[in-house]
Image (cartoon, helix red, strand yellow):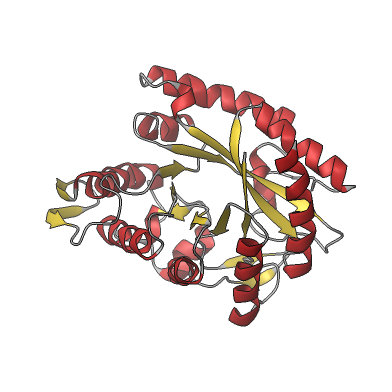
Length: 300
């Protein structure tokens, strides 16, 4: 099982020198991946008004600063990008990283940032369906000609191509029936966010079962799709304050290193192949603590 770490989002304002040090620490400690959220602005009672650094700019920097770890958005909202430009960015970052990008994709949810930055909030799944068609076609074949209700992409080609002939793997962050029906025939990986299952592996099992049903309906072998999960781990922090608490309540995983390691291994027993650790607090000290647990998990 691979284990990665998500960088800070809006828990506190983190300047680039500290982020850069976290990136260095994650790679040197032996983690498998680094992730960033693709969000723009939050307004909520528990955090006030806060915004993260732009995701794709960070990903380009991470790709250049690292040599080994995989990296990706957790997950990119197709609503915030022209789908052809998002595919172009993905191919470029995959080239900078020498084929280490995992392209996480979703339909978005946070209406505040849509309104603030001028993106349409209506019919997000329908818009995603068209964007997903354009993105995967461009990355896998290098060209697309598409006319839909929301996007007109005429005679588009990605040149130069990225380092992988079929592009980076496509990881879908959704559990909705319609989203799964759209993406199941094509996804390479799938991600579950901790709020969906209360950060409890036992509550994740039925969600995985629904995913497997969607894959079987699409004619896929469920074992062909890499299942991933974002898990909240706390080392005595003040509380991870990212996202909308009304979307689900997560109890952080905390306790002894042995307890945390054994719970993470339970995700592996459910078929999870890659964990994205959401640390509370997110700083170098927490990353180093998590690295000690990583050693224990990898040895079992």
